[in-house]
Length: 257
Image 1 (cartoon, rainbow, N blue to C red):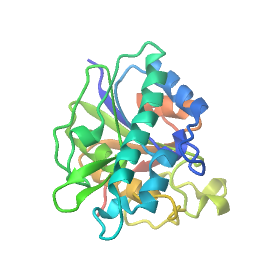
Image 2: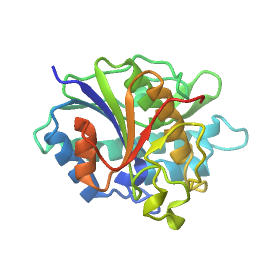
Image 3: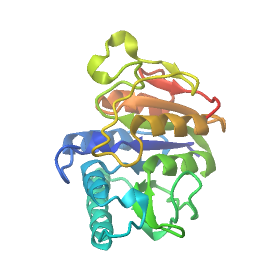
């Protein structure tokens, strides 16, 4: 039986983050083609991008229940927006003849962070989950990041060979922000003792950006699973990473995180 690969499709990769609820169809279709040609059992975790972060930021959903703010409608809207984005992802995969099952986290997960509760659903074909607004015992609700979901699947699903973070616009973790980076600024192997200057769209992102991916990646690596960040806009790199071939990107190794 083929091994399992857990892969994150970043929200900034599959949507236009500066345009509310706007998908990047070309990227989604290219990634779906990669999945069609893969020999592995795949778990896909996709981000929210412009389908979740903007509204979640406006209504402070990551903080849970906030006195004086009417948040219930926003919780419902973000969940519905995420279901819409998820359907675009699933439809692209299914149109290529793939056996796909999606599991919205607000239906099975509770709490936030890497220790959220809930039994991980798995499909015999391709499993798809995503960052979502979930119930929380202490804060009523909160944002469960796809990066935290990545950690659980990569360390608890059977026969996981590697975890891949496919991100938009960059080749991996860079020493300096992308706007200042040159070809020599890619960090080919990163551990938590190494500093880097990531660009974090604080006015939009509610889950931690590249820093959270690096931290969760190192936690996954500490469990003996290979972890790599690659440029998801270059489909061949994603394909090579899934198959365990050498690829341009950042390999994440364990450290004190």
